[in-house]
Image 1 (cartoon, one colour):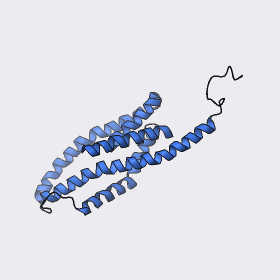
Image 2 (cartoon, helix red, strand yellow):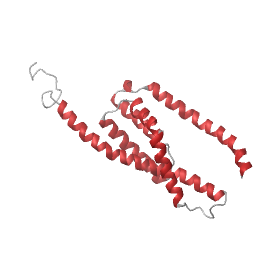
Image 3 (spheres, rainbow, N blue to C red):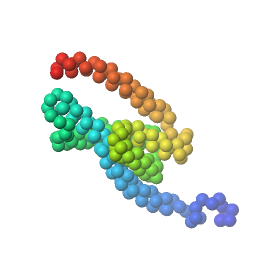
Image 4 (cartoon, rainbow, N blue to C red):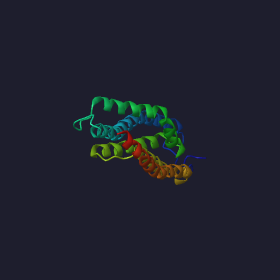
Amino acid sequence: MPASVRPPTCWCGGRCAGARRGVDTVLRRAEWLTAGALAFSHGANDAQKSIGVITLLLVATGHLEVFAVPLWVKLAAAVALTLGTASGGWRVVRTVGRGIYRMRPADGLASQGSSAAVILAAAAAGAPVSTTHVVAASVVGAGASRRVRHVRWAVVGEICSAWLVTLPACAVLGAAALPLWRWWA
């Protein structure tokens, strides 16, 4: 087909596959930065919730006189987050990263960057947010911005169902644990 009749696919006459690979390589490298920012914001948000609960329990049980976070509590929270993500978190990462929508490097960069910004802003404001909710929503948004039909809505439905079950299940478990706590204390 002559160049004057060919649909405008690329400035280089339709041979952009190499250019796209080059751009994807740059975006993949930039994803390391946004992944680091997301990991930092995750720790800043989730660790402070755990640290606050543990320190409150230490004060309530008389192990601390004032509400001052001991260093060992900070380290324990950091180790617990690291081990939790390393051991069981990969299933969540795989489901969110590939199960909802098969992301491209640009999608990952946008999703991770926006998630990191939202979570870090919430942590700075002292607002506890679910990092999983934020990241999953940003992945759905990235996928839907490309093509709504490419989002695996059945997986999104399963995730939402799990979120809806979690709160009542935690309430029931907490109510069941209260008599044990009162007996022990």
